[in-house]
Amino acid sequence: MDNDAAPASPYAGLAQKIRGGPSAVAEEYANRLPVIHIVRPLEDWRLRGRWALIDLFRMVLLRYDFDVLLDDQQVGRLARSSELRLEISAGRHVLQVKTPLVKSRRLAFEIANGQRFRFTCQTSIAGLVLQKH
Image 1: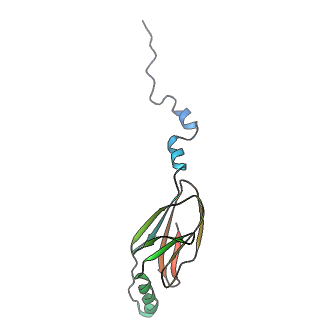
Image 2: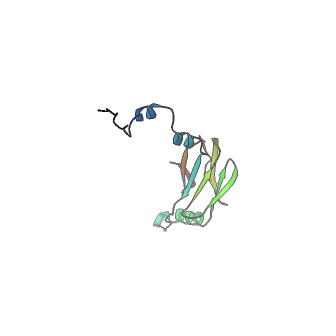
Image 3: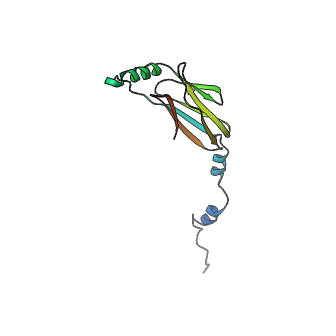
């Protein structure tokens, strides 16, 4: 009687594959350009009693599109309730959002290949607020 070996399991060698070096998918992900998303959510601007003057200021700001500056160069524009997606080079960058009336503080960040950052920009009493999430 011929004693053939059992067929190889589909899991044969899996442990070696897992313990081995980075997979092709991981290598490809690490080589992708970094991406940043800048979001401008829809904002409510109702006038509310004693805060009406501040809300009026915010209402004026909401009329403008926001210019997006990356390293002091304009790279895009955000309308109300919109999003901007940018592929950028790896390294240290400075992000800022502005209108003809006011501008946000400069937000410095460092990003590596394969990373994704998300920022939101909203109006406030102080003008424009840019936050990293």
